[in-house]
Each structure stands twice: as C-alpha cells, then as structure tokens.
Image (cartoon, rainbow, N blue to C red; front, side, top):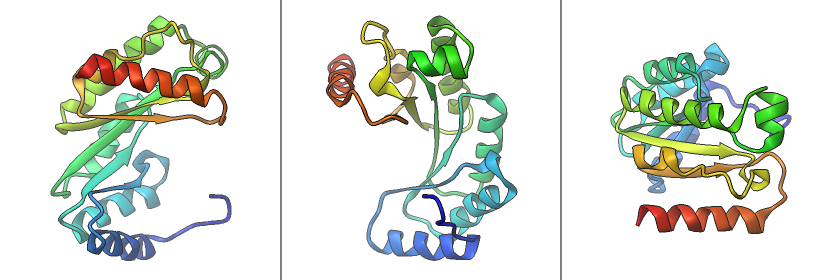
Length: 170
C-alpha cells in the first residue's frame, strides 16, 4: 500500500499478533527486493513457530535461492513463486512467448521444491490471460494455488480458470 511501510520490529509485532489469532500462513516479504525485506523474513521466521512463513519470489532461480536462505530458520516454510500470464505480461513486460513462460513457471516450481515441500504458484494478471492457454501444468508440482492480477478485470474468466484447476486436481 503506498505510504504504508513497517520496519522489521513492527513486522515481527504484527506476525506475533497474527500467530496469536491462529493465522496459519504469513507471507512475510519479498526477500530479494531489499536487505530489509530479507531480514524481515528471517526475523519473522525466528519469532513465530506455528504459522507457515511464506516468502514471495518471481519465477527466477536467484529470487528462489534468496527466499530459501531467508526462510532457513522457519519451522514451517513456503515459497510463493509465479509469473505474469496475460498477453500484456508475456509479450510486453517479459518479451517472451506463452510456451516459454509456461516452461519458466514449471521450472520455477520444481526449483523451489528443491528447498521446500510447500510451494505456492501465482499466475499474475490471470484475469486477462488467454482462456485457451493451459496454465495448470505447475499445479501438479505444488500444494497451494494462488492467483494474482494487476488489473481488476475479467473476474468471471478468472473464476472459470480456477474452477478448471480445481476439476483437474481433484
């Protein structure tokens, strides 16, 4: 949220309150983004014991390596990795193709599983993704499915994609 910033001490305080409330997963930060975020994930991992501590990454090996390092002291660990899947992300932002993006998504999930058993995948901007393109392949490699989008349009489509994923993994 623009204008909202917590330091590590404040984040630990919030994490402890969330643990007391019985929250099962805390997405503690994006470790590669800054030394402060790395330290927050590391310190939250030490400060709480019950929730799963989750670190956000892009579908980039270096991001995943840094996240795994930040999570090294967590009792329960999760890596949340993903990539943009809309045409706008694939062609304009990532300058790639759907096939290469899918390969990167699968590779990122498999790479993260080298470090942790619990991997969550996000299909960024899924609300604008091509309805015919199958983004379900990474699902077979992980325990948790997440969806995120930058533009809040196409919710009907997004829910249809989620319904397909659920049917495929049942």
